[in-house]
Image 1: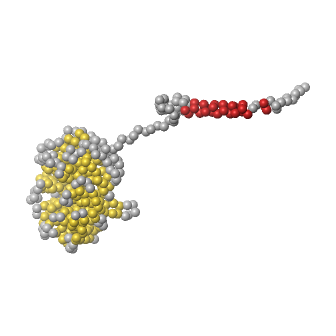
Image 2 (image 1 turned 180 degrees about the horizontal axis):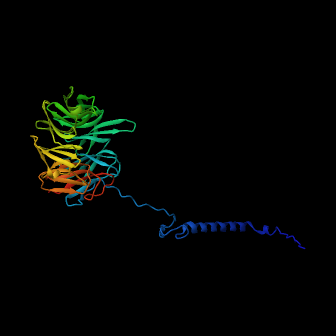
Image 3 (image 1 turned 45 degrees about the vertical axis):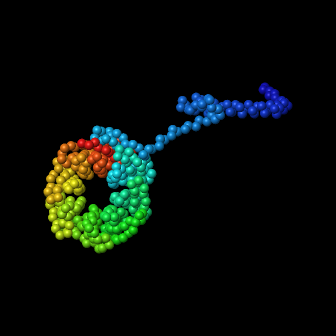
Length: 462
């Protein structure tokens, strides 16, 4: 039979632990906990630590924290020197860079300083804000400074000792604002006028500045300004409006008369070349060349020539060269007999260059003052973007994925492995050539920072 013997515990045994002993036990427990925490989290090489864990400097006492300091980001140098060209044909290269798209608008040299006007879609690297900018270079193509403008540059013109620059900005809410800046040769810029409508063109004649603004798809306004120191004063204004859509080409001044050339169309019924003539403040007169049915004629480019105006047009699907006299009484056209997709017209030193992009490749004609045409074999397969007169007259354009420079004499042709969308050519003081190119890069130049940068290239004389 199982007997259970009761166990009697003497409670007096527990009462013998003193308060001092309890305090000692508590202190030891705290020490044990601290040691465990130090082993797990504080000791290099222990649990949770890796070979990359920073080590404390034993010569420095105090803080055992594991703070990691990131290396400093190098500051972007905007005022940098030009780099040596990557190919023999390029002496030096300077690239205006941003992480978006940069596009050339205008370039000019004054007193050995190159001024490049353009637009950017970003505000990083070389650009403090997106929109318009002016960059100044010395003769070695080192960057001297930047000026940033509000809005996208839409027009530039030299005026006196500086430039007049038109900008335009629009918001998602439909608000828009135009500005006219006066930019001096040191890059200083100030707003002198806030016109209504987008600035389409600026011209200057004998101190009178004419500003053409686009009011709508079928209307323009030309306003003359006089300048009194820093102040611009509006003098006379003429409004041009049409029942047709108007695409602006150019504006010329002959004496006191302005001549505005445009395309007037309402497709598919009507297409025409139109010239508006007027004195500032007076009513415009329209001279149309084209019309409806078989007379539909789409103009692509217009320039003045010694006897009037010359235009490249499409009529009945084929290329035609149209000429109109200054009095708009005589109209002639010459059919070239082939179709084309785009056309451009350039002038240089008494000669005209008509470039037509065809299905089989671009074709370029040289046209003299008497309208004699000569096909230029050196430009076969080349879409001409500009014409320059350095040591020789040169055509500059694209041939596939290359930028081509071809002398009209046929003496030399240079192909650069780089894509090009727009190009400005500037003559240097010693007769050399600087190209300012909007490009997405290529083997002949440094890689772009974003989708498209602006390359400023000093070419080797050849």
